[in-house]
Length: 250
Image (cartoon, rainbow, N blue to C red; front, side, top):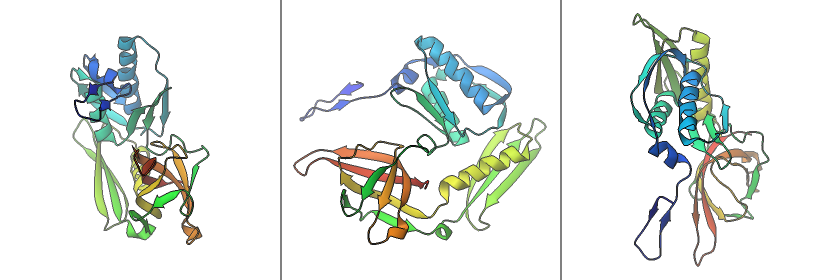
């Protein structure tokens, strides 16, 4: 519990183990010729030593790239990890039993999806839109800056697409840079639904769950998606979940 509001009805704000990341600090270090995985593993090991409890970590799809000589100053673990997430486009969050880090949408890729049938347990689909894959135009460029200031660049995606540029340092392997760029394209370019829908409170659905959408009027549009966000509400209208749809995975 992080905060208790003064309003009526009473509001209670809760946080998961992220509050421990905010309360503890990393002393800082210069990492030399390190990979992203090595940097994260050392930071998280330091965090575990400070909280004096084991931390189970699940890692999937983390970019296998070198970050060169990376200096990290003294700061809270939350600040450091947030900056690394923004720079290298991965996710990191807590579950009750473990910490997940890696590419989004991989955590529950082999689990049985929850069923949402538009004619049975979905209330409103007005904010849901079906898009064709060719509607999404995107291009990804990865730039690696070497110690001698030489730049290695790789590019993939649509020639006239919206450009997203990623930077790293010291990585000379073009295949690894290309794999990082391709992984970003796969996250953003797919054919399927986008937006959000309103469903009943059952089945239980949370962030990163997989859901199977069924539309009896357009069965060809059905598929399995990852949940990006869930907002739960209670009231005279009953128990509701507003679900933001993420990437299509099946």
